[in-house]
Image 1 (cartoon, rainbow, N blue to C red):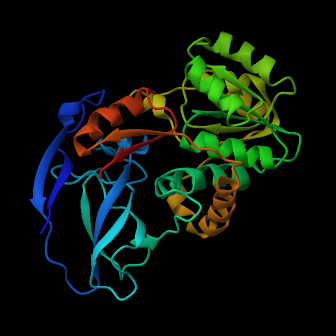
Image 2 (tube, rainbow, N blue to C red; image 1 turned 120 degrees about the vertical axis):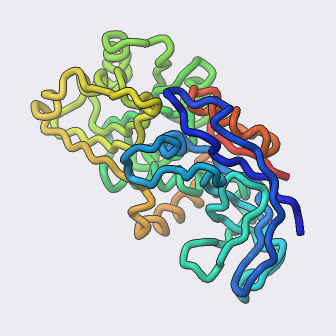
Length: 338
């Protein structure tokens, strides 16, 4: 049986996550039982939510167990099967975690899904046509629910969620404004993703400056906001929000190291009669088929051109993940395992 390299969570972070929180181990892949499938992972996904699960704290999901393989999304190829619906060579999407192989009980609903790579590259099923894309779709369509002509804003605009959000919002006739870190990312957001404007948070590093930049980029105010970051940017958005603005609260990466993120002026939520809704996309599986159909069409027709940052080899996963948390990635962060 193949030797399987894995990354385990060895110890929990004390403040900022570091490479020594992780441990590389090797194990033999076990022999298959009935209805099991052996998947050779081609790519594994690195996502900001994983940082929160490294803490042993109350959250929407159970903490990542110590001494076990880090959990996360994967795409790959079936290399052995004892399940009648899966054949060797099938390309599949799963939740195999930070490892080169996974043994999956394919009889469990949702454990494994065949994917079609005819028009959509395999890696995109971890990004634009996967969980990040559906996250963007749900926040925009179900929470912000924009009307044509409205202005919507998203943080982390050059990432996997942000790029999908831009294409989806432009398709609905919105003015779309992104916030990203660095001139290169901002240029990509406007020139390749088609946003109407993008603000560099590294240039506008406090509430006053960010608020002024938002006023210029959003002359008619902000009707919808997709939040991935939190902190002073959220305060600046609240200053520019219109009456009855809607906020889809998806992530607060600025606070993943354990520091609280207080709002400077929460009264603005009342003054503007705003709706703020936090959501976890895995709790809305009923929306995935419609979302994936639209996202797949956008990619296949070239209206969504997602970008990927790809680290090579399982050993590179910890440093790539830490870089993601600091905004060093450009687009969806993946690890290529073959």
